[in-house]
Length: 210
Image 1 (cartoon, one colour):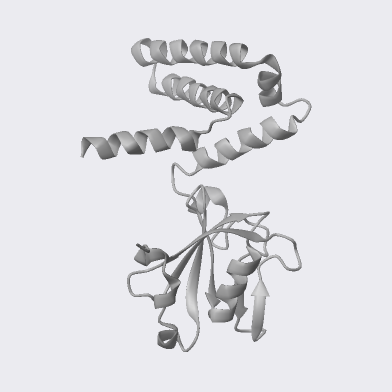
Image 2 (image 1 turned 90 degrees about the vertical axis):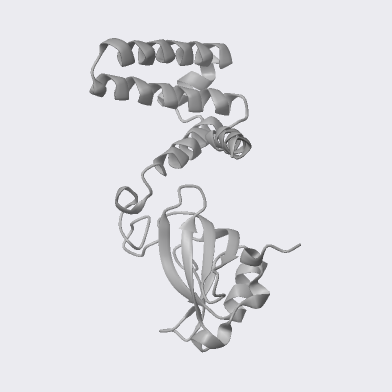
C-alpha cells in the first residue's frame, strides 16, 4: 500500500494556482536549507534528473538549483503534507545552498541546524576521511593504524569518560564524552558502519519497548 505522505498524485496544484511551496531539508542533519516553488513540470524533472528543480517565479521558467554554481541538491526523498499542498524535499547538498555562500538560506549551519544534527555531519566527515585519507589528518592516522588501534582508543576514551563522570567536573566529562563519540564514530566507519546504523538499532529497541 502506498504511504500517503509519499503519494504526489494527490497534490492539490489548484490551491496554489499551479505552484506549491517546496521545503528543502538536509537528508542527514535535518537542517532546513531553503524554500522554493514547484509546478508539476519541476516535480517531474526533479524525479527524472535526481537534482532538485523549482519553478522560478522571477525567471518564469524551470530552474535547477546549482545549474550555474554546481551546488546542486541531490534528491533523496519527497514527502507530501497532510493537506496535499506543500512538499518536503530531503536532499544531499553539494556545496552551500544559499547564493551568499551559507549552507542554508536561513543562515549558517550552527544557527539553523537541529541541536543533534552535527552528529550527522561528523559521521559524514569521518566517512569522507576514510575514503580520501588526506595527509596530516588525525582521522587518517587512526584509519591507518587499523581497527585494533582504533578499538584501543575507544576503550581508553571510555575509561576516561567513566572516570570523569565520577571524579571530575561537567566540563571535563563533556570533553571526554566528545572524544569517546568521535573515536566510536571512527571505529564504526572502520567496520563499514555508521552512526546512522547505530541509531537504527536504538530506534528498533525503542519501538520494542512501546
